[in-house]
Image (tube, rainbow, N blue to C red; front, side):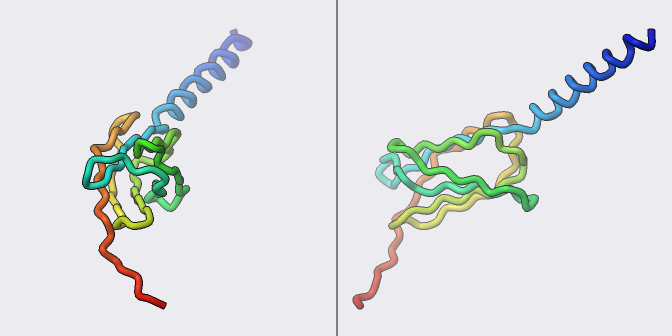
Length: 116
């Protein structure tokens, strides 16, 4: 009896820890457009954990899409930057395993460089 309890308890502990880990991994997806509804590529997308943990980086593809997999925090800040566009930032709490953000429209930057 004692010989069967230890392996069963170990197996139970393994599955509990595995299910616990799986519940804390999230995916964040989004798409970035300009004001003409054209997907913007090669923009820097940064996902920062609010708890002071990691910061993840991605580049948008040629359709403006980005995906962050294995996000380990529910409380995050999202920043999107690109040459010629205003910086976008948003704070949110992830409530579902896969968060698909609404379309993000970046505004052209009105900054003009002075002549040297």
